[in-house]
Length: 597
Image (cartoon, rainbow, N blue to C red; front, side):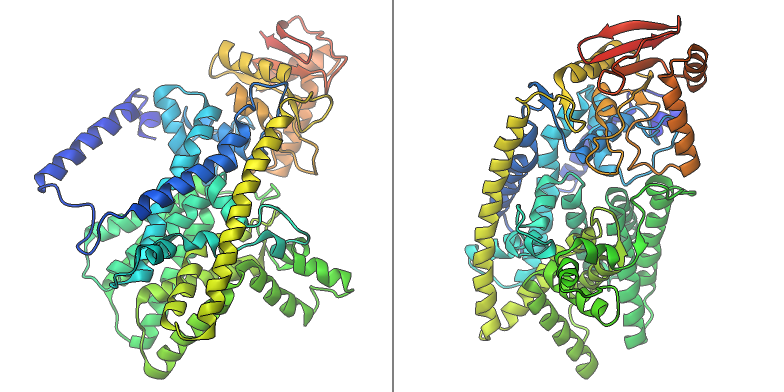
């Protein structure tokens, strides 16, 4: 942002080496302190977990698109293309314009893409390949740190066997949280909705889960400490990062921190200024980032990603709602809605719901009966899980994105469950849950095998001809996009005629912006927060670009500031340029590109 505001080139390039040199200087000045705390030591568990997450992440994402750009056809999941376009736009300016809609300021939790954008800005790398090859390591490193933190919290001060410690750190992956066959009707692979999201990390859910665990761990560590400015700075940075990586994560973190503060104050009647300042700092970081990065000051809410407070979206898309419908029951009518919501919660949490409920009841009983608060981390964990359940049950977002609320707190759900198991070793639930985790391990193996199968299946698509399918892009069309990338000025504006993959009602075609790396006047707009009247005006203008009326097309291109007109045979098979201002600069069997002078 500083480089964009000042116009001074190279600030980002030199910032890394300078800060690294300063960090090394401080490290040696402080007599090279250990990276481990007093009771910690290096364990091979760390390496094994990192390697596993890294390899499976590559299988679930990178290998799937290994030959996407070298066959007869290209097909890439629209979310990946959306993020690729964001990387391109962010690499040029910050704050940036939506690369799919010319003139629209882009608001989104795009800090994940910003990491790749800085690399592209410094090294000038291809955005898609950078994203494809770097995703696994950016997912694996923070997630490994978070899982280790969780494992150490579960272990406490006790020394346990290497195998048990490995389970404490990695057991989340076999916990059975968010299993697709339970959440949705029918048998669906992969089995784990949680695993699919954190391994692919396409929408930064692996990072969101990791940040949640790390922030809660820091809060628990400093909750009763004396006021320190360094703690406030750290929390502010965490709050900004959480909001920038995933807005739902920050919302939950701010909410639970205030809840713990208020409830504890009501119980103990002891005011602690640092706790209040922690809340204020987290809230300030959240609000500032939310208004300047994530949403903006005047969100139109015109796109179909807007949240609606209702359980209907969760129930109608889920297995429970569909079963109720088959039985002839109205799942939105009382009392069926209550039963349906409870069953949906049980399904999305999986078997760990049993031990979580028992853990929560036990903590509440100790608090109410004996006045014992206990480990404050436990209350943060319980609160985050409950907030996730409420978000999943009471909020509806197209695509069942409300499931992110549960995934965000999945690590803390596992923590509560295992802590209860440890404290009740002699009870039947201990053996039952151990049996479940064995099953969970087998299901994880099934998912890994499925990822490999999906890779082979997806790469076979690239050998097919695209034909007239709107969800496939031919090699000739890709050639046209690459020509634009390699032969036009970086600040060029292009007009395109493909806006949708026509798989459903959404306009989610993002290939031109992602691979040409050029600003589109209008492309897929479903994920963009554009007002309805503005969108209608853009659509109308975009149609005029391809008008057979010379005066209409010429005037529209001139007013809109379009530099290149991309014409596909799929959308305009009989197109003929009538304007003398349009000069044919590229032509193949599928695409014609005209330069507008």
